[in-house]
Length: 485
Image 1 (cartoon, rainbow, N blue to C red):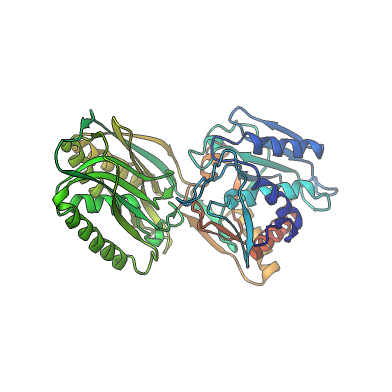
Image 2: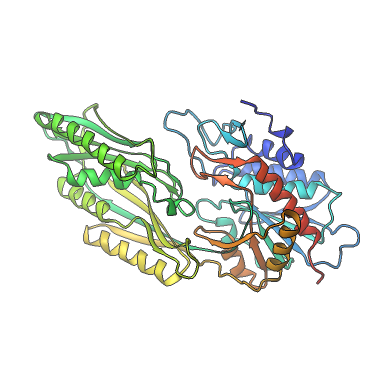
């Protein structure tokens, strides 16, 4: 495959993106990408700084004759979601992403690409570099650690930004303007236990594995009704045709990614192993049939494995299995005001044992704050009945749409002038930083938009090449048409 991304158009955007994908930048490991942005800004003689929350701020003066225009803040985040296929050997803290051109798309080899939000960051750098562009006063805000908690947005200094308009470049469908987003809440649950030795006798150790699911972004793809590997695994454990002793579990990955894989090591009476294997084979057929229109590579397997030395107490394991089987997951409510938009959802992202506890993570999203809080309390109540404790944390509000927004009207007109059709105006069931930034800068007029990115937060992530050109041309046209103060 062709790996010469820098040969694509628009050249400045792809030049910077080709460099960005070579820089390791998983959340909380963004030192190198921050240095890249700062070094670039200094090389252009632009005012720049890093704040206490590790956000990078760059200022570019207006082009000649545009000094009287409203100030614009261009915003993107610097980190990426580190997800890879199970058979891919890759260290996200050290290895460069292997990005390549695949027909009309740019993708990566077995890992997330980081177009979320690397393309947005690259577009901002292209604007900062190109001195031929017409624009008013510009500020660039590159935020830190968005994917695991929006730390940079939460830590943004009040009074730092001087602009009147914020353009967030973190949306993922070209031709859509986002004017609202969901808020979020983390539910972190812990089952403590004192590990017990596995019993002597005729027991066989087996590893049950769920693989091959599509996964994806737990906000954007939640409406697709994709299978959750944790739920698929624990549904079987709850209905297994023979007694199972649970030794360990490791399901899911990041809190904002729909789980693609999950596995459990169990002990089964040796005489029941074939019954277990037959039941799992039938269960795989059931799950494949249920998700026939959604998932195409479901794999549910069992194989003998090395005998563990310890296991969860049977009573704890029983409560855990039933609680996970009953835990809410997926779409909970659709919006009435905006048909097709998810209003409230939850993603059971992680279930993992460490020898003394089982920890679970759910990420809740809603554009209605009271529904988000009520769902969190319901999940906490469920696990409390099962003897676990749940901490609800990291709550942030959504971004309420302003359909009378001046920049919305201006951008709608600009898009129609460029492409002959009006852009779709919508909201997104994901946590954009606009909601948090807007809490500290309530006067900002905000819009989010971007190129078409499919399957973010999964190794299938890809960005459409043609949409990047349309997105960037639209960005340039928008900057040239910013109204006067």
